[in-house]
Length: 110
Ligand SMILES: [Zn+2]
Image (cartoon, rainbow, N blue to C red):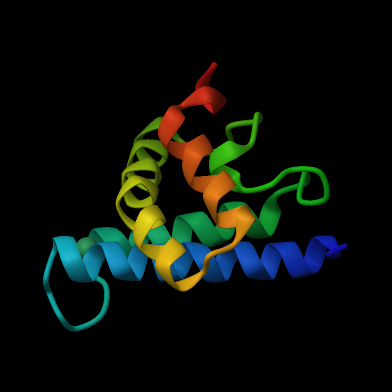
């Protein structure tokens, strides 16, 4: 069983990797994150750092308490939709699959 701190660290790492992949493929700036992706990453890491539900939840995208602003939530979901399946090639983990399905199915929105 992972501790809340390990989950937090893992979540932040995954989020950064997904945003980096998304930006590289979609925005093609080729020199790190573009401005809007950098903002999104910073925002996502902040939310994760402050999340009081780290122990019980699986991932921010599937969290029932939506602490993301609607605008940022849309962006992160788009990133997940794009990067999720690609990340699974490199991280074939059950957790990854779960995150992706939850993010894409939108079941967390209701
Ligand atoms: Zn970008």
